[in-house]
Amino acid sequence: MNLIYYAKYIGFIHLINNQLYKSKYLTIFKRLGSHSVLALITLIVIGGATRVMEAGLACPDWPLCYGSFLPLNHMNLRVFLEWFHRLDAFLVGILILFKFSLSIIWKNKIPNWLPRTYSLLLFLVIVQGSFGALTVINLLDSYTVTGHLLIAFLLLISTISINQNLENDEIEEPLIWWRLLLLAPLLLTLIQSFIGVRLSSTWSAHICLSFNKQCFILNSHKLFAFPIAFSILLIFATAIYKRSLLNENWKYLSALIFLLVSQIALGVLSLKTNLNEPIFIIGHQLNASLFIAILTTLIFRNPFTKKGLNRSLNSQMVGINS
Image (tube, rainbow, N blue to C red):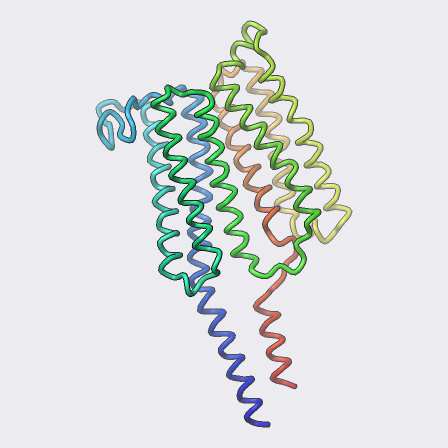
């Protein structure tokens, strides 16, 4: 009997050591993932500011700027925006390459899916860099600029999904219907963002506001605000009905409502000022990025708080006591 008790005790200690051993490595990836999300949101917003300030060709060459890493002799606001946008993109690439390298070195100590997922992120970074070069080579071609933003959003969504999967290693109740409900405004917001890029990169908004011509893109962009608003209100109402969802996700849901109201207000202010106030347009881009980030977090996070380690330890304790 003592041997059985001892064996269970050794198994319990091994479980604790194994969980703590793995959590040390996963904590590093979680922290790096959080930094990646902030860097990507900054990248998207600075890219929007570069577009609004018409600074996309402020550096006429690529990857350097006026033939140097730091073009102090040519530095002004537009050159700084384009230079800083490239610097942030470079740092994001280095950060993802670093995470991929760590996942290869620690592959026996982390989940099997992590190195494969980081290899996908690294591929997206390479594609993103290629699109960045093409935006300069093709002189800000509208489709190239739109593709550049698409890859940036895919990087943001992928990074957040990895972070949430690391946080929720054991999800007993994924609630597929809840994820599908959240997926609708995410897709609509992505479509609206792409239309917004087309709007700014083809000068359609200025032509529509000044000459009342080529208004289809602008009207489409405004139209998408209605189904997005309806879907967010539906999500909030569903969470209120399912009180447990509201209790666990109220911070994220409240942020969505705030961002929705402020996004509409910024869009109205941008049009009222005939798109002549960059701060409103840049704020509009920032809100869209945060909106996508929060929706992605809600989709991939565990909607209910579950402590997988505690459950495992408790079951082991029950076994030992028995």
